[in-house]
Length: 219
Image (tube, rainbow, N blue to C red; front, top):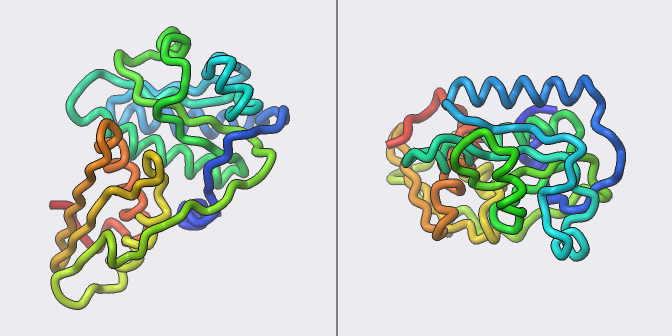
């Protein structure tokens, strides 16, 4: 499965089976996390067989069987949230290519428990991973013309990028972003409250995957 296939197939999954993740898949995840940490100066961490991510109430009503997850953390710098959004979705999509499901959690995790395990000074969220009881369903999406514009006739790569961006998971599924293009220059604006920078990183990754980095540059 390619990353673009993972983008099309990945949906939020909140309930998981007890099936263990094979060691060879865990090794691939660990390497992907380590590579992202090294390249972007982050401290993301994979937790296995740990059921402390949520409080009892959330476990009962929402998060069933979550025992494997990735802690999104790093040094508290201005660009941390965007980097964790960008790298976090890379790992979630990579996990999808390995046959795993995932759930990006930005607000309902147990912050005190997670802080004990985090290696970075700031935690922005976690990504639950594992084998879902179901594969999830596509989120409700806006139309391309509602969130994008291009000065002139839009090239194919721009349209592909926008379509991929519309498949990105954003906080509360608001899709509160706008993408603009002119020639090979692309800009993106996002306004989703405390999740703005995280969403920005996620949507940028999706757009790049759809458009191809070689076709444009961010401005």
